Image (cartoon, rainbow, N blue to C red; front, side, top):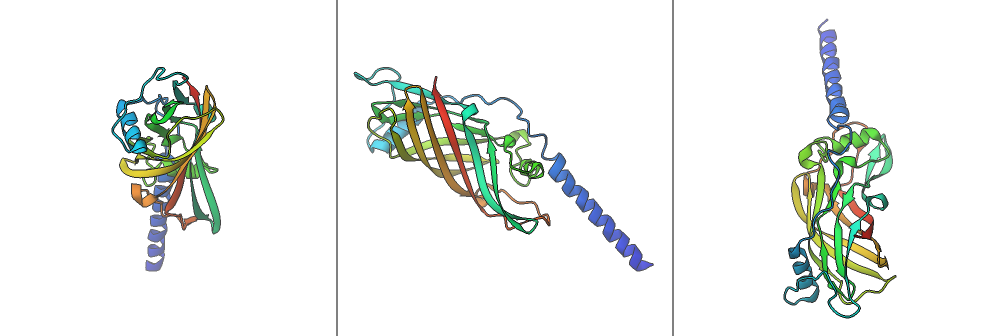
Length: 253
């Protein structure tokens, strides 16, 4: 009789725990709908000053927006979400089998201003990604990602991921149509309310006077931003390392 009672209590506890996990994965993750449409962040004068200084090693040189010399122009390019994707990648073991997880969203915004005769005067706005809209190949995983243990992006406080550029290395001199420029870009990455300095490897191609396209990627760790993994039997060995990046097309605005 006592054994049966103990087993019954144990089963009840497991049922409650299972219900709690179901709530965490399903309800706490929300619908994945953004709270509002992303707007393009503004360019700031301090950005161009820091980039000119870091690229040239000399004093600050404010960027201009008109013709600075014969044949040179400053052009502003705005990221086109219809042709752009932000992503993350990591590895896990799901139900005993290795799995490479890729999450993507087209909810990304930002802009760049460059002078075709002097790339060192480039200006970058903040780059903003709506983390609530990341999707993988599993709706259950997507809800877990939006939940409080992982990104907590279902909450309005942590819906957005922001990258604020502080310095760039490797861009200088003029650029020609069709030319690809490789460089690194460093800044403050804010995820789930935590800000850490991250450096991206970037590559940008000047397709024509109205279009640039490029990629940027970096490796971070979950520990840097306090990103946990729910303790569930089906998921194990989730890597601490996460590859993050963006593939974008930006159009002259």
